[in-house]
Image 1 (cartoon, rainbow over the protein chains, first blue to last red):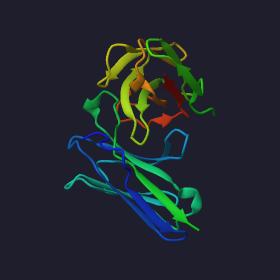
Image 2: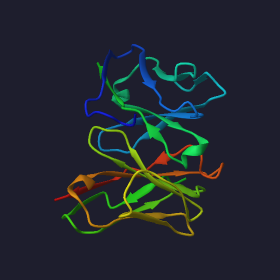
Image 3: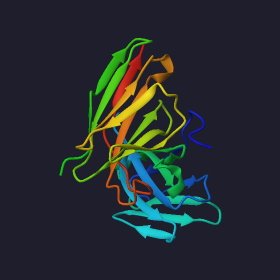
Length: 113
Length: 116
């Protein structure tokens, strides 16, 4: 479903460790996926994206993995820093959705110094 | 290059009033999407405008309406405000490479609307 629930899952990691944030998406027709980072009081910030013809994409310190068989997406952050603390959302899109991004529940990442 | 900007930053209205929120898209982008984000939840799609035409609409009542102008800036209008309309309203722009679909959307900082 879309954005159900008010209690965000929380991931707490030590500074310097790697973080993995998971997301299950809903629409098997979705062919474009984006990870966003949202800090308190700000709009979502684009991190990385992947299209359905790929299963892995790497950016600077971040990697997105896509498993279409089980409709699962993950974001890996290497050497997590205090500045990475935020809520992370996955979003899915499909050509037949009229431009609508469907956002996942969100995961709150807390980095301990 | 200027990113997506929104105005005002904050707004307080009373129930039954009308509100207009504004968005300037990123340079070179012709598509604007609007989202509503309630506290503790992910953004919910309201509608999208591509080259001044409504391109898609989410599950919001007709009292939510919008416009896109020739310079691709956009307005979101909400009539007959209800308490549940209190939220962060986000605007996102995208290049419109595929008619606005499956296009990377870049968000502005949002307008925080409080309805009393």
